[in-house]
Length: 205
Image (cartoon, rainbow, N blue to C red; front, side, top):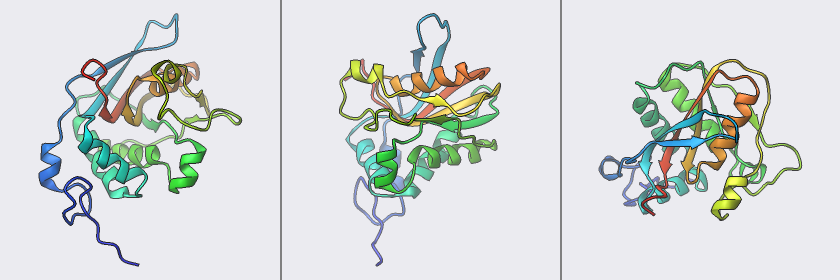
């Protein structure tokens, strides 16, 4: 069955977000510095692409829950362009979706986003993080700030000494990225920086 694709913001026919709506999305005003586990003097530098808004929320909801993969590719290409001056990296990896979300959606939005970013930067992707068996399967959505900061644990799937770019769709408190970076550094990564499609600016909200 054929369904006409529409821009998730203005609902005009478009394969992804239309040019007019894309040009009106608000760029993220700030970069984040996320403190890692106690005793680790490093901070995780995070580069978000857009500020979180109703339009950004509609775009991400259509991409993830509506299966609009072309929107994730559109975001990934823009993220790659915004990272041309980022530190040199060896691989792009991502925060994996929860098993429940992966089953419901039929794909891992973080993986697709990371693959598109990596293609734009001309570097490979590596699946380096996993959610341990028996861990929390609900993700971070709907949790309080303290619950997010405790977070669902992430573990590294292999040892690595590489310089890594860690990708996620949205940063709200930084908890998921912090857990991911902690796990990657524990596995031997020499450097971890991060990028997201959107940022919920806590100071403004």
